[in-house]
Picture (spheres, helix red, strand yellow):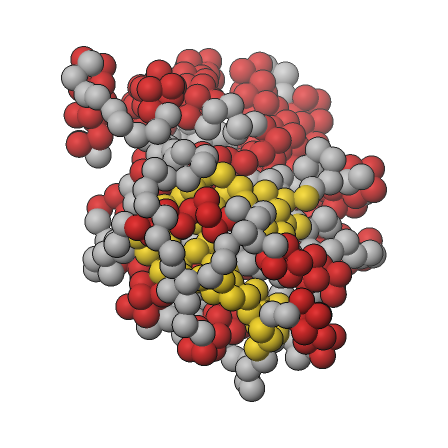
Length: 512
């Protein structure tokens, strides 16, 4: 971090020059974002210290939860600030490097997806404009209709005799019976553009490039109600991780060097899916990665609450298993910034799953008990908290190119119960993976009975917040600032969670 601060000072003095693509155009945004990130860190530290010295310890049970939660989210912001400190972007047309004639294997693992989806993906793969390519469909669903589609399109069909270790096992079986110098993996629903190989193959002219991940886009309902476009992740976060050589594989639309995969013994079978953990292993072996921020594939995303939460649960379990049982902070071979970048992934889920609910509960407790953990007059709290709050909003707006909206926060906050469940699953799954089935992304008709459990914690918290607001307004007569602050935060809980409840119970009004 000290080196990053020195670089920022040199930027402000005009002592540094830049050669990377787009640096000149984004320099003002980058420096202002860095300055605001420092300001947030200072304001947050002052606020947290003020809270500690003004705590009413007779309410120790709430005070400890509050102070720990505030500290966790300060640490999360520091990690977030590190991710977005500087971003690396690449030429959309690909790198200005020699495009050697590597042989490429295209691996498409499938598992009982609808045949029309598989055929569309396969047709697009056949149309990829690259001569030295071979296409393999890896069928773990043992479907003879899939074999027939492969024969129709004249591509290789692989069916392994056993089906252990999920997608990673499927990929590893194919890895042993194929020979291409490079391996492009596509999920069963990922429709590739003809120029996907030509656009990224130039990176592999550099011998230490182990893999290249491309940006992913998805076919989404109008308005992207679930936030499945993940714009902040694909347009901002991954470019920040790329700057620190910590961009990781997302499992599809990614091209690997065969010798890199060989160096780590194949695709990692330790997690539910292979992508992030394989990336950590590759980086720890000294391989470099690239995030090419242009999309060459289009996939599908879950449309209902059951499929959506199932997918996010899987991602959370994998990420938290990593920081619990193979923590990147202590991973040999990773440099300091790679360790922070990988730790941030799992820590984000811990913060939102375990600690965010504390912020939902505190104003409810305060309004019902007429008690609070701070002893200073509440207008002092407002004076100290407001700069932190506003600077955080401005910092996020600048560093994420205005993509981090309240709607996107609602999408993350609404998953707190999913992340909470995933944490305890990860905690008790050190050596044995939990049971899991492939997410079906096609539209399904789930009953209200199956959807209610997904949003029941949200309903309870919203109703409690509404009741607490009403009770506080009726019973608190002589402490305006106490009432105003806690009504504000209880209303914030309602605003953060109502959308998830509405999408879960009445999807037809939001998903069109």
